[in-house]
Length: 102
Image 1 (tube, rainbow, N blue to C red):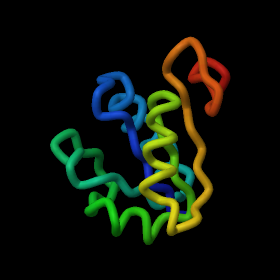
Image 2 (cartoon, rainbow, N blue to C red):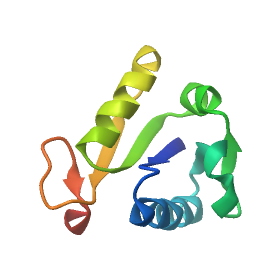
Image 3 (cartoon, rainbow, N blue to C red):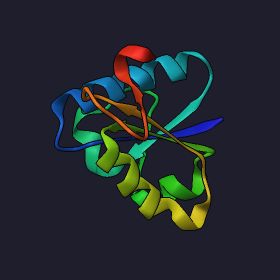
Image 4 (tube, one colour):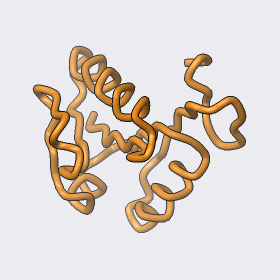
């Protein structure tokens, strides 16, 4: 399975959690994609590609941030019809699992 991880770039904790999630997914045999704009904090084994290539290749999209992050990613990925799982880092969410519930 190929998973595209999309953290909210405005939340430092989202990037840190995205890298931890990538490590966990890689140890369980998943292929992990991230936008090449995030490559400066790279993790071994993660493939960094332009956004369109990430969306084309992914089986599932994992967003990390808040409701706005999942809505933004849903808009970008609409034509690819990929399932999206969102992890919310804030105290209230209408569209995500909260980080402490995962």
